[in-house]
Length: 155
Image (spheres, rainbow, N blue to C red):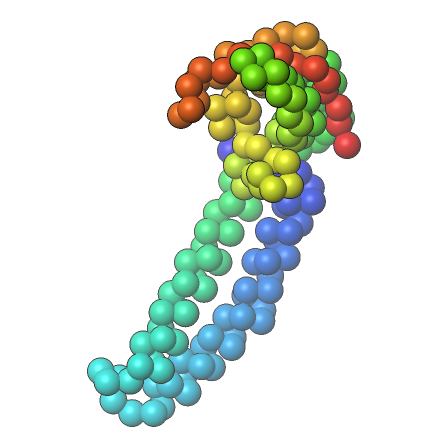
């Protein structure tokens, strides 16, 4: 079971709807047109249309599984005094004295450029459940880090 923000759930549902209602019918039409051009064994247009059809079907199935196995997070039920899903946490790397700020999100919402890290990432997992002032030890590919939680906020 994955938990998603309402915004991300709606984005996935909209993408799925677009793929089913707009993209896939066009892919089917392109495949039928390429198929009508004759011998399929030597038809690059047909092979390309089949490849696109396969990618589209695969993406549709992937999104359907995400929605089937996901629930929208009720933000009112999340603890406000500790790091949890959808919390924006500011912390200090005690080794380098560097401050960072990230939002803890589900793996399907992760976007480092937007400041969103997965709760399943080494840093996200180590920070989960911590309160302001507590430290977390993180074993990451770059080595072990000690992080101190400076603030926790929610949007």
